Length: 411
Image (cartoon, rainbow, N blue to C red; front, side, top):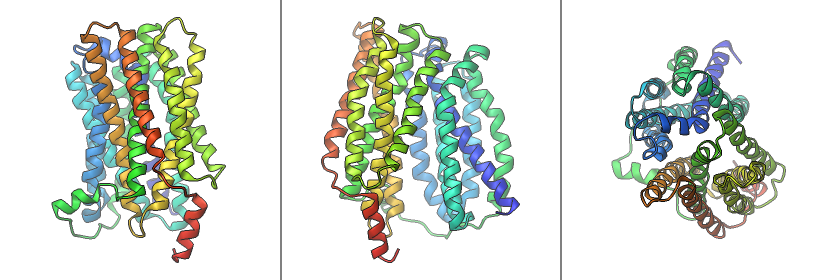
């Protein structure tokens, strides 16, 4: 691999690492933010939802621009938006402005992610692509383990604002490494879709792809809805520090990776079965996670719920992603996988937004925080149950069958 590609790889991996670290470090410090800023509790859900909604918008907008103008303009705008959002978030005097900053961060992160995968296809030989994608996975895996803990440590030592401002210092280094290399890449093919065609292109294709996207949407609502509001239970009800809450949340991240690895050990298991078992673990684990809001329940008992939820999330994401690929029509694999990504990001946003609505409504009705969080967790479990029911519409297929079909088609 030439030096220019090594620099490009380093820049892309560091950029992905920064985006992942920001997305995960905020989890244990969110209650501290809500307590410090005016209107914090009322807009708590939007603190997370704004990021995911910004990412969803960016995913829809960035793809056609990359195709027409190449990845460089989108990358420059994405990095600039991400850094601007970090500064806005770190300096925000109110929760409303912080939510705006989070939306800008999410839009920047969505553009960066879109460019990263497009760049792999444009700039690397087929033999090198799998190694680069493996580095991307590592760039997400490491923050999933250290992000919640690191966020708690930074918030306790320097204040929650440095969770944003500290990353704003890192991102210019990433830009210096990656932008010059991407600017030297060829532009995409000119052309565009009409508005109606562009809207249709982001919708999941009919059939099994649409079913898998629905499962992803519902399960993502359940997972992020619970994970985003659990820190309130850990810090405001149980009295844990942000660092201690980060350690508990890290259990979810580690078990999520374990679930992803577990699926890879059994490639002959039908993808629908993998997804069904994964969502079933969510249905079983989320009520136990909800016990985090009950002070009399020993905290180690709730870790079993975090473990089941993490493993279930890993199995679900792998099962639905492989199902999308297995049932995508020839030539539409990109549209199918993009629809799955959009369903995941949208589910994250909807789940955290609805969780905030449920929390605010319950508090306004006079419930204590413990009761209000119980309502939120019940809603998340309900979304998981709907996702489990949807898995029974998924037909049986395996990764091995997918490879056989591709070979038969000459692919």
